[in-house]
Amino acid sequence: MQSLSKLFRGVASAASVATGGEGGRAPARVQRRSNGLSELSRSFRGEQGLCVLDLGPTSPQNIAYLTGLGHRTYNEDVLLSSLDPTWLKPAEDGGQVIDTERFLAENLCYEKNFFDAVFCWDAPDYLPADLVKPIVQRIFEVTKPKGLLLGFFHTRDAGPDAPYHRYHIGDTETIEMQRIAPPAPGTRQPDSGPGRYHHFRLQRIFNNRHIENLFHDYASIKFFLGRDNIREVLIVR
Image (cartoon, rainbow, N blue to C red):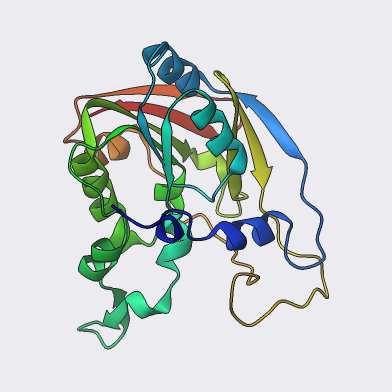
């Protein structure tokens, strides 16, 4: 089992990014009703002691909410981790690619069939291409049969400049979306370290067929189309 420092890696980074960089103010949160979260909550109603994996920026609110229900929560900000240049290796064309074997040797290292639920959020839309399928496969391995995965996918109308959000669970059917905005003009950031601002740009748009292919090993997929250019997907392992 990973150490607490490993499980909560990125807490300081997430906190600084959420405030928009040094000297910034925390952006307002926008509430949205989540049909996917509502159905996931119904499936686990009355259950306690579940193991839940959160793949987004660390949210103390999510930790408090889930532990308050009697669950164990684990957090790994895979998108932030993917930016580490030490994962890169030379490519055949002279460029660089992410060493996926090394990445998975140090990330998402859990026993098989460990998690009852995974909050994937919109990580696949922003991850480097080389990591999307390997991470989805690793999630499959560490999730229990009939375990649930909640994912958010941008629709084509979102556009490449769609803002990146930090997701907070409000209640059984409400998500609070906190936009991670660029720092104010003229704001100086450190060259490295936890205060470093990272701007995540939308890398791809998955249509329904793409999502079905990406999660082809899973038992079932249910789509919920929202009004804010985000398609929710509840996936059964």
